[in-house]
Length: 126
Image (tube, rainbow, N blue to C red; front, side, top):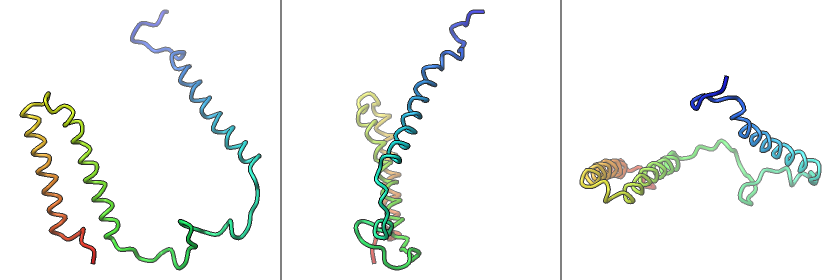
């Protein structure tokens, strides 16, 4: 029986399987080769924990102010929301007045959230 236009046969997936196998084979080959050919020098200094060129001092479990995390989360939040403005700007003329009013609503909600954050003092460093 011949396959129709809407039917897939297993041979249709053969190129994808070959490409996946080739990529996986290359990764495994590269990992094994670098492990076998790479230098194997261990020392106390090489095994020590460093961060940004500074030797670690103190306990890793010291409390960190939540302000760092709140600032990072707010940055990501507002940054991602601003990304939605790029497609709107590209299609500004095609969207017309409806698109303008929708973006005005979006910016109003965005700014109300921003003013709420400022009012709560989350961005204030003390």
